Amino acid sequence: MTNMLDAYAAIAGADVIRHLRQLAEPLQGKTVVHVNSTRQGGGVAEILEKLVPLTRDLGLNAHWEVITGDSDFFQCTKSMHNALQGNRLTIPGTLLDHYQDVNAQNAQQLCPMLEEADFVIIHDPQPAALLKYCANRKGKWIWRCHIDASRPHRGTWRFLERFVRDYDASIFSLPQFAQALPHPEYIISPSIDPLSDKNIDLPLAELDAVRARFDIDPDLPLIAQISRFDHFKDPVGVIEAYKLARRFIPKLQLILAGGGATDDPEAEAVLSDVYAAAENEPNIKVLVLPPDAHRTINALQRITDIVIQKSTKEGFGLTVTEAMWKGKPVIGGDTGGIRLQVVNFHTGFLVNTPEGAALRIRYLFNQPKKTQEMGVTVKNFVRENFLLTRQLREHLTLMYALQNGATNRIELG
Ligand code: UDP
View 1 (cartoon, helix red, strand yellow):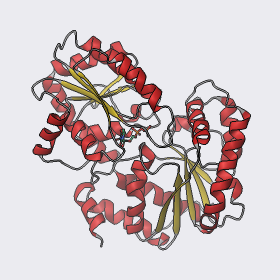
View 2 (cartoon, protein in one colour; view 1 turned 180 degrees about the vertical axis):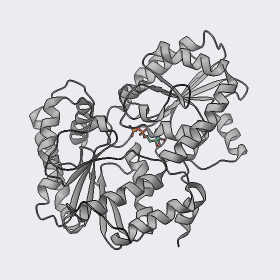
View 3 (cartoon, helix red, strand yellow; view 1 turned 90 degrees about the vertical axis):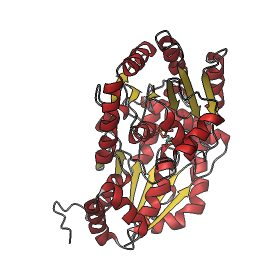
View 4 (cartoon, helix red, strand yellow; view 1 turned 45 degrees about the horizontal axis):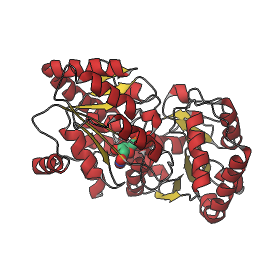
């Protein structure tokens, strides 16, 4: 029907697109509004960028709204994020009051639209309190948690739970992240868009140009972590692993590339730790990229031999999926959503320490045949499990299920 969906048929299969159209049929014309707190940077923005237009292509009236806030607000929500991922920190009451005030201010603008929508999907803690200020909602509200909330700081979760419990449903990326809530909870893992600038095939000349631009020697081994500068992504641990691995692979090069997100105030501090750890290391390149450097990131993921994502906490880790789609085995932190993607000896290796990462780097460079085999496995693994079309199918199914209330049986035409 539309070119965009047809283009996906070529990658995901025509039957997948037929299935999406069938699921979308009973939802024609329904309004669905996604709300998050940044238009650029981080996995949520990455997903919404394409999920929303594709939903529209299927005949739903889909929108994406972004709340605004000042630096205190984002300081507070970053602390919430860290606390939900397990950090023991108590957020001052004044900041929590401010969090609610900012949500109330955003609600003044957004409520007329949100209250009328058939489905509202609120992403992560930042806009979670909006529901409290949109008392006359007509549709179903869903809270979508992208964070590894498996062991949240109790006080912070109790604060957030006061807002989240009133939603009609919530979505978590892994069963281990789900919380005790008085509504249906769904497990939906994120996905990548194979047709975005971040993931499409690139001409060899463009890869060469990126190598030249960042002074990367094509004849020397290269590893890379491409991720926001965030303590949970452990970029300093990657540098430690690199220094250990270099004992066995003397000419090894490392790229640490990333930027911040507009809702992340901590990137600067992490970056200065990274610069300190990389001092006097000419073969470590620290690249601070602008938020729209999608093709550059694509190229970096393609030119590297191995991708590292040594997170100590990770909701999902789209960077892992992106690397795998480009045929790269991933050495990933043994945590959260990375465990869904990285299967030891098949799609990469799970590690807990810089020493573990260094050993796996050595293994992959010493076993080129195995590394090549893994390169084939990883791409098929993403095609089967982590393409946008799968996530869209699950969103449509969820909307349909919520629309049909408590009926146990759902008939598709
Ligand atoms: N990303 C980006 N620029 C950067 C760093 C990351 O565009 O400088 C992208 C990355 O390619 C991925 C997303 O941001 O698509 C990060 O998602 P992920 O789930 O890995 O982590 P999050 O940042 O959401 O914690």
